[in-house]
Image (cartoon, rainbow over all chains, first blue to last red; front, side):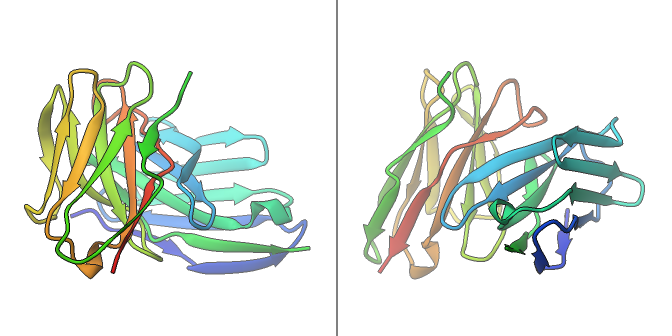
Length: 110
Length: 113
């Protein structure tokens, strides 16, 4: 059974600092890995999707890396802003579904 | 191009009642999956529909059932509601199966009293 863990559970940083969010998974037989953002009470907004053959994916201030062999992915957010405050979830595609971590809740202080 | 839509947005029910949630997939998408997200947790897979059949099912009781229509829209039905069924229910669609990019709807917030 795939287990996805996100550490830390919560993070508070001053504006302008770079964010590093970690995701680990137990079964390396994945197709894709996707990072999502979730605002309180809202649905999921897709940030980045990394295919299993890729090592990283970038979009604006966001960069996500994937190391399948070690079962790890990292999401980097450069020069954080108060608008980046949200919960960030990673999900792996395997066994006919997405398996999610519990998320990292980020607070960016102005 | 409309994304994934879900209705209703919010719903309040009492224990023992039945509820039906609806999902319209992104245009052209033929695969619909349902997830339950309890407060403070990541979404959990309920089941997936493809070509009007349930293809995969997560660890949820038979009280949870679904349907996919010829236009690929889908319904999630929950019978004999329990307090623990209170959650955000998310629908995701994709084209060509579960390995393809999943697009999520805004969710339906269900509160069971």
